[in-house]
Length: 152
Ligand SMILES: CC(C)(COP(=O)(O)OP(=O)(O)OC[C@H]1O[C@@H](n2cnc3c(N)ncnc32)[C@H](O)[C@@H]1OP(=O)(O)O)[C@@H](O)C(=O)NCCC(=O)NCCS
Image 1: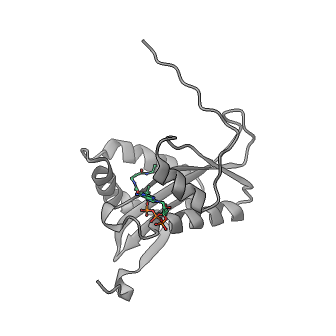
Image 2: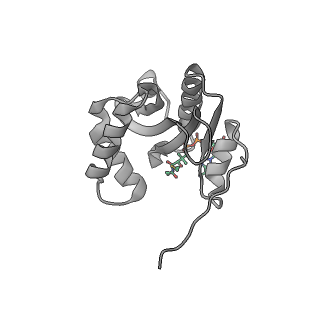
């Protein structure tokens, strides 16, 4: 299919009008019921953050991707001012077209303008494609260790 101007990917900051599109996209990605309450809480949190850290990718005004970041205070024993990539997803029909990479690069630019010097994220170690994606925009193994315990 020829990509016309109208099919161009636009990356912009999240608006409250994106709620339905995100709920729909999230359900597609998870193959689950719509998580309205989850996203209501998320939107409430995003409103408290710098608006440039919550981005969506749209095509013809349809939300096809999202990426959300945050800047931490003193948490997890790391200093204030660390950027975190927390949440990311791209509609299956638009995956492997560079959408996530473009959103990530935009988010990293936003962190830079906010004087963030280091950005962290957490991934599942066996998710090699997600590791590949983060590697492609400059992330490498950091010094943090994830600990866990099972509650019986
Ligand atoms: C992970 C995800 C966001 C990637 O989105 P995407 O737009 O398809 O990624 P991109 O096209 O920008 O890929 C950039 C690079 O990441 C790597 N990559 C992404 N998806 C991959 C896959 N399925 N297999 C192998 N490598 C992959 C590749 O290195 C790719 O570069 P290339 O296409 O030039 O080889 C998308 O697959 C997704 O939404 N998955 C479900 C939700 C999820 O797992 N979210 C992440 C945790 S919050």
